[in-house]
Length: 324
Image (cartoon, rainbow, N blue to C red):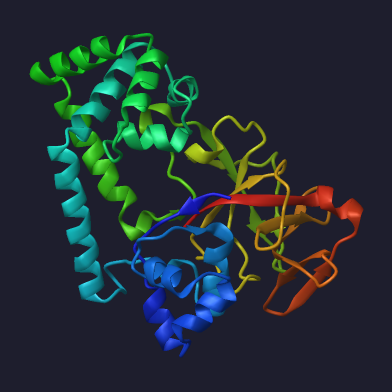
């Protein structure tokens, strides 16, 4: 399950809810030290834990993210200072130049992010962060990237140095800086990963209209809009997206969210999923597990529990990534 780290307001909502830190740790099944680090934005959460936190603190996922409109100013300023600190470290370490150079060379060779990542034995998200200048690179990783670009390590270093001295990387660095600021603005925060890069975006359709029962109608023959596929889902041919046009999950998810659905992923407790009750009509559910290990679905407004048979599992499509 994808892990994420982000500036958050978990501590504020926990205190407003009157919940001690130890209680939250116990209910999440982690240590007290881990909760402290999570609340400070130093430790990662997975998607299931994030949903659990929102449910335990009776708030939406969007409420957990820092934003300039609703967050305490000291929290906002602390996060801005941290971003500036990281940016200065990256700049002094030459990471921005390295990332811009890799992107320039990759693009000229007609290679995609996925191709280079796979041949360098990296995940797409790791290589993408390297090209964005937001991740350090070990000697082994540097050699693997050079090999993926069909170059020796010395050739790659010299080429990046030449590009930098000729001023050919400035526009790419500026582009990356702008994009990084957007991706770290809480209004653009998401569960999972951002789309890989505007030059490599793959567009996928977004469906969904609501009905009186709070169900979502998926009519793939109707006109639809498109949205960039998240990098975590690139290469998966069956992905589609859905507008959140129901409040049957209460405030758990922002009503502006777009849900990226992977029908081939196996669902488990803690997931959000679409349950098809006909070819076009679905119910958006929070997936749970009873004491016997049997999965069932929950939704609210009004409360409703939906039990599944084994044959129903093929009708359940997992929500893999959520854009808030």
